Image (cartoon, rainbow, N blue to C red; front, top):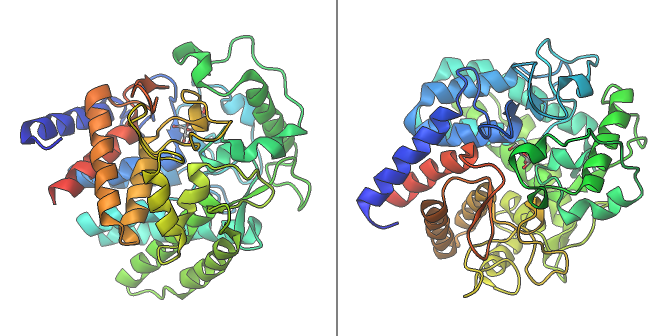
Length: 420
Ligand code: 2M8
């Protein structure tokens, strides 16, 4: 990726992918598989757009916030176009008290939005925009603290809230749950081969959790949710998001104190979830499996010893690192684990958003060379194989959806970083 012409070609392609998924109102994660607006996808898209079209980036933030619920939750999907070829769509999620007029799902996703807005603000400051969006974002953060923070970790009530849907971290918590009946043809199999997606059993369980959440208006009484796990990775994302929100508040001359107080609680939760023997952060109520999510919670604690283990882990072929036969990394599950499955979704493949977050975490912790090597390898992977949703770590084959938006958006950011 050193040659300037190759870099400018990749940049042009990335901008083209994002543009082709842009509906004008929101950016689809992929052209066919994901026809609505997803929450953390939108944040990654904002990070890329900040470099090339800040006005469009601001619009993406505001269109996501159009889906905000009265209680503050920003949902994981906003169905701006209610007739949508996606299952489970608006008819399955139904209506619930506090849902805005635009249909949405009833659960949330990793809250990266203030971190994306902070990057956008650094590149293209715009005070009126900040004045419009900071209160809604803070309302969301407060919702997490009011309803989901337990023992210092953020509880997820559905694997989809983690963003890493079929990660083995959730296997045990899912094991006792019934699998709901599936539609005759799964819509997610129309565009992506079945062996790259969650199994029918897992998908049926995801739907049965949606069914039981819907019955309670997506607000189950404490202790009554059928699935509940304290997620270390989501906690790390929120702890950084609080710091970024505090910075944005200060830039408007507001007090950052409440964000910083909320963050302090999460940092204590993360510290107590670190397991030195396993070299992983351990979820409350999840499985202890070597996954990148469990290690990448170091993103929330840059000065902590876990950052060194993140640097070692992504370099070590026995865990998430590359070797001669499997050059692309980090794998989403350690290759030494019996659960590693190199082509199935969040159970082995390489994901560009995870590479990006890993590089950011390594940078903050001072592991610059490991971060640089990872960014270079990620750009090579995309240049050689295209803008896919995820990749086979052995062959580099693209998996899932082609022309994937966050892969394109983060390519733009990675290119600007290595040009600096
Ligand atoms: C994937 O999740 C959706 C459900 O939300 C799906 O599989 O249909 C995950 O990779 C998630 O992290 C991502 O936000 C979403 C859209 O890209 O796809």
